[in-house]
Amino acid sequence: MEEQIAAVIAQAQVTNTFFAEAYYFLTIPLMLLIHVGFLSYEMGATRVKNVLSSGIKNLLAFAFTIVTFYFFGWWFYWALPTGFTGSEGYMAISGIAYANAIALPWGDSAQYMGPNMGDHASGVFWGAFALFAATTASIA
Image (tube, rainbow, N blue to C red; front, side, top):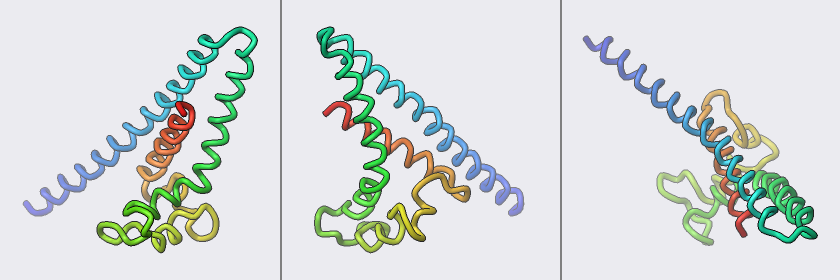
């Protein structure tokens, strides 16, 4: 009986991971479509002489924001959840020391900056978070 319960629990954990990954893999393309809508709306709402500059501005803002977020935003996300004090957050999984260990895009922590084969949800979460940063930049 204990073995069957353990098997059910293991299967439930696999199912939870699958649904989390599937959710983010479905929402990331939808978030890209938001940017297509922003671009279409802004180009359609501007005067004819400004259409090209409006489109270029949106495309460059999107490209620049993704790169900037990769190098700086992910570190800030992990380093400053408690404000500018840099102190450790709940369960000691945030703060400047933690961010230096896990969120720098170079060195040993680079393995945590994208899809991790041991933890697929971290990669799709990073993708969704990067697109959220791009959405914020596009609106601003």
